Structures are given as C-alpha cells and as structure tokens.
Length: 175
Image (cartoon, rainbow, N blue to C red; front, side, top):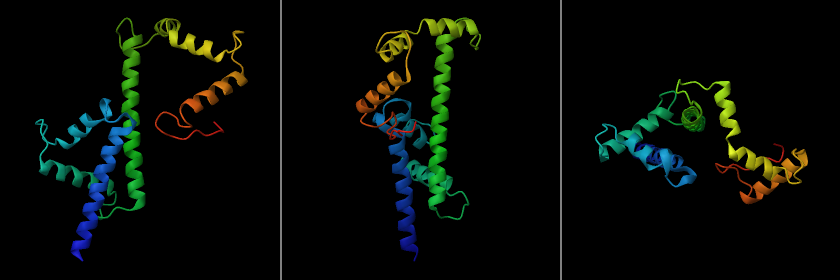
C-alpha cells in the first residue's frame, strides 16, 4: 500500500514541478523574467548560485505542500485548480507591477514618483504608436474610427494571430 502511494505522490510532485517549469517558461521559451532565471531562483533555496538535488527535492515538496490547501497530504482537483489560479494571479500581479514601474519611469519627468496630468499629456502627445495605430484603424482617412473599421482591424489581427490572443487564449467573438 505504501509503495503505490509514494509512487503517486512522487508522480504528482513531479507533475507539479514540470507544470511550474512549463508555466514559468510560457510562450517565450524561457526568455525574460519568467523563464529559466525565475525557476533557478525558486530552486536555489539557499541562494548560493547552485542547485543541489536536495534543493530540487525540497522545492518539489514545497510545491506539493503549497498546493495542499487542507494539509491532508493529498491533492484534489479543486486544490490543484486553486493553486494554478493563485500562481497565475501572482504572475499577472508581478507583470502589472513591472509595467507600472516602467510607465512611471518613462513618464515621470520630474522624478517625484508620481505622474501629473501634464506629464501624462506630454507622454500621450509624444507617443507615436498611438498615432500610428489610429492611422492604421482609420482606413478611409476621414479622421474618425468607425465601429466597422475597428471590427475589420480586429478580424485582421485575429487572422495574423491564428485565432489566438497574446498568451495563447482563444478569441471570443462576443468580445
């Protein structure tokens, strides 16, 4: 009885580890802050710049324990789902924090840590991307974007992305 339980526990721990690695690598093949560097940091528990087999085992055990919300030594589908959702939310929050920091860095010209209305206006008027996007959407060049022009652009981009949004999610025709 113990051997099958240990095998199943080991398989689940391995699956959690592999899922974490795949999730960390995402669509970007491990590039950027979510990739291999992040996994290395998570596995290098003593922060000595090296990963030992013991650290890998400890990281797997921690991943299992983190997912086992009721601490009963078993993982249910609901616990796995909740753990995955929490990891996703944590990554999204960190990504948003990085974006906000970059926006403040680019826009806050007086370096007071805040964006004034004047700084926001100056950044918006110097943003050539917005002008370029408007021009691309305004296909008949009449200075306005109609609902039809916006829909045509959405369909064009959908075709370019193969029906997928950034992040690999399917488009919903109702949005």
